[in-house]
Length: 503
Image (cartoon, rainbow, N blue to C red; front, side):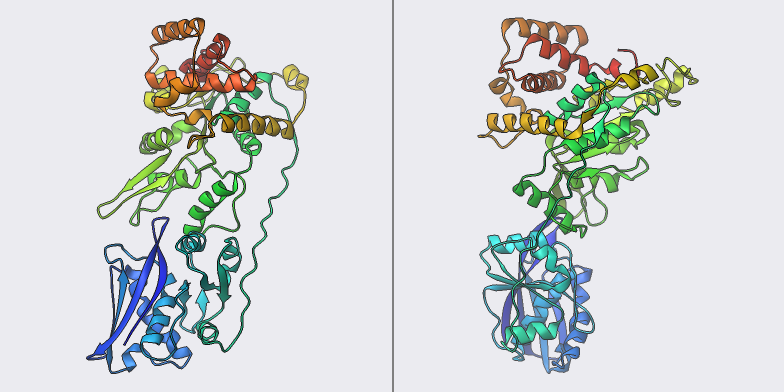
């Protein structure tokens, strides 16, 4: 007696098809699961037995047979209770308690002791994989109905319990497929902004070209507020980007609806390296992955743990992060716009013209050393934000958030047209080997850059970042090529003196 059906498990955030085989053979009554199941899958034996009891079906241990369940491929660890339902259905078919299972179905669902189907994590990526593998239909728990309805091209049935699943498969009841879920984005409030023209330009450069930005200055100058404003002026995600980041949130069980806006993650400086970079016993993704295609904001940058600051060097450079553990090694996407803020010293008032700094020289040096050279090298824009005096504050003209957002969208579209044949879309993402392809300098500009490299001892990474920022500045000014003035401005934003009030 043999039966086979399909379920899906998650390896990190990646869905993997699982072929579930159930065989009943002569021997002492037993119920075994093989194929590298984790603890949650092993425990499904008890959940399945009691759920079968709730629908008056014969349990594995009540039959004079040995019940064996194989989860293939055997070399991949199977995680999660979503395999309960397909295992139970395959057992019912193998034991002759239901007719043949349809071949174009796959099944997801955790079983309760009373036979109910409980909500599971990762429905969105699992359904998308099922669709990609040409399955036509799927049964999911009723609680996952809204999330499941985000996927088109599958007949999705959301049911409450095992009895309804069996009755539906045997044709005793008719159930309509899940309707497509509507997904709306709250309208962005068009609030007025009061930004200094120079700061407005820095914000525009950062948001348009996705250039990492570090703001420094005394407390109360609005550094955190500016990060929130950059979040508001980024364009909406494309449908493909929306699915990409929504799958990550779904796999972690924190997806409420399809994400149409770039995510904004703001971890506290006391957070552990595992929560930010990912890892732990199960090598789960961290904040850097949750910020994928959005913004990762570190407020009070020097207060973060040293291992966290050094750990973000990899995603800042490559757009992904690898979490290695003894038994597994998983690479997660982590391409984000990095925003950070910091004070120039422990008390916060070094360089402030109104308030005197009370820090000792040694304290200031120790504080600054928390931000290593390699970290600063990976940040495109370093900007000092001074305290604003009252007369200047009241002289600033209001600017609507929508006007900045529209400008960012316009510049972003220009970049997308330029890189339409590439896998990247923004100036900050131009790989090193394509710098000369997209960034060409005339004799005057090249001479200026050569002098800057010698005078400021710029690293190759810093030079590439200056070129990318200069290209974004040229895009903002609607110029087809980089001019010396664009390079000079980009260079000014890269000098580390800017973040200590010395520039």
